[in-house]
Length: 157
Image (cartoon, rainbow, N blue to C red; front, top):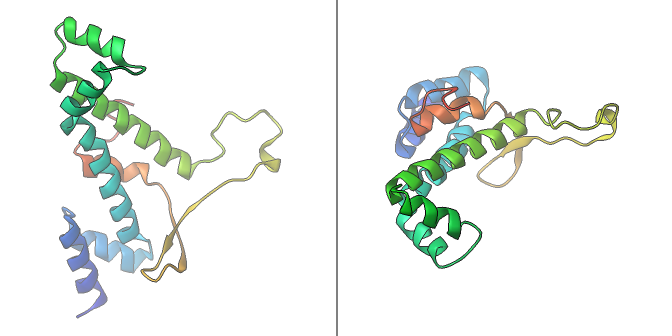
């Protein structure tokens, strides 16, 4: 089995829409595409879970908590639990996109002028199955989240 075949199989098993193109990109461009896909897949599922679990979290907030009054008012005004789930999913998606973007651009944090040279940054790096750093950086993750969560890039931004 070739590296491309093995990677294609892994992408397919994880549910990638175009597993071979992801695998080819990883090999030809030396990008950590499997690590990218795995993180984006998990993030996309976490975002989607907000909509599917709306009845559970709405019920929990109705018993008290910081959002109990706004949720009660929304329900009284005719907003459905399903509507609240869609809204929650969109807020989660925007938050995930913001975090993924921040991972790519640590300098876009409105730090006071002149401080940038003294501030640390960050990067997200791939590790092997054995837990060893590969030296490959996962960058631009925000660019591919829309592909996995079924939204168009830029929608809502």
